[in-house]
Length: 567
Image (tube, rainbow, N blue to C red):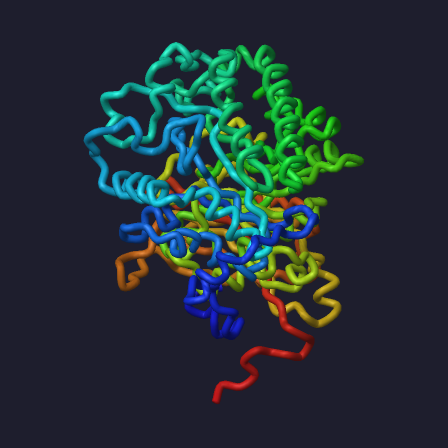
């Protein structure tokens, strides 16, 4: 639904938790750790963009610093996954094993980074360790706190990056640890300055950092990011790095057990990985062993990376199978970066659809894996809180409005080949006469059952085509092999449509089909094929499939319409 309609449809949601006058008294109480149940809904935060380090003016206030926790209280989110380090090895807390942001810099060249480092250093100078503040606040509010960091450090020259303060002396002093250039086509869009784990010095530096997070701090665990800055070596070397990585995780498990024994807190290790086993092999990940031998507690499975297009349909079957009979959990990781003209981030219905698809495949939980969850800006709004509220509840999601969508790149970005996502077509795709363009839409809902119960308000299939005039071109659209008839079709003209900020783009039309029972999508993957049967000979312009989606709207109950009268 449109965001402007949201509050009219859902009513007034619970307000976002704020840091109020009782914060000092609350902080004085003994922190209470959350239950022994495992995390179910995670929200990621890089500790900077959608957090007080960047957003709040100095001097830093310990009560305000924990706002990242406070705004998630009672939202349905039980776990904050917080990035405690930068890609160049600098810490965002009072680390004893690595440098803190700004330790090796005299003259700054970035005002925001300058502010963030000053805030951190001043908090620490005043006796407040940022990481302890966050741990304690999470536990006081009954939430889990998981510390995230980078495994693949980023190297690079001192000259362009020194003024940012994001890279440690360890990184600057060891250029020989960089992976370097390689001829493998899969490495085309991967930074060659990432550090190689074939070097013991890299593995040991990263181990000390993660060990500290597990043993020194009362975290509920750590997350290993194995989806970004990978592979941890050249592609031709993954067979060599694979046993080193598994042995490293084994050592980390031992450190986690030491921390758990000393603190009386269960220490979890989560790994963020691409969803597909062929990608695990290509990166040197022995995921089955990690799960079977109890080395990791959860797999956060991504349909790409944090910056990949929204993917409603990553296949979780391999991850679920790897965790079967073990204590390891499967969570679906969802990047909410939409990048469309009127919405930067995924709408509530898109997020609910992604979660429903994950649970339908056997996932144990859902994670919004992004630099910061701020779909309507910072701080969270009532709409955001309502969105999060449903995520732990598959039964509530079942009757929530949803918008399922085929994978499509963000506006203005290139559609580059992504070897991590199997052979799925990523839109937009060019339409040539007689050559079908297929897109996959995964749907969790049993639409026929809802229809029989009288609670289905509507279900549509929408195909957005660029640079097309329907009266001069013939297009055929099929859903799971069945051609959708024109009797179900409504056209929306976007050839030139002015809104207050300018014209809608790209130009074209939306072909919207109101689906009837014989054309309902099935549960699971659905294939939509679009064929340009005949093209207008008088125009020389590329036509394409830009978006394919399936919005489903529900009634609260049969014969219950939200707006039954107009006056």
